Length: 123
Image: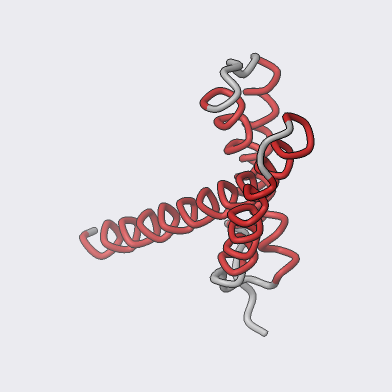
């Protein structure tokens, strides 16, 4: 029984680290897109494009840290992106997510889990 608990704990730690990495990746992408939006829509300084480019470079690099095939990584990342975008909506834009937003985020996370937690097949 102790061995099973250690295995489950290890899986939970790995899942938490992976989720945190996806969340950080999403924040980098959102910042990289939000800053140019501020420049174009709100007339903010063009200097915001410098940290925007850095954030997008960070985003691309963070995606390479995942061990899965690129397409699967992007698919799983999409679920986390939806959730982080709704957190951004609330924290930065000051708009509380609706029930529909939360339902959609739940569906996205379920899809993410199905893809991410599929059985590993030996090649």
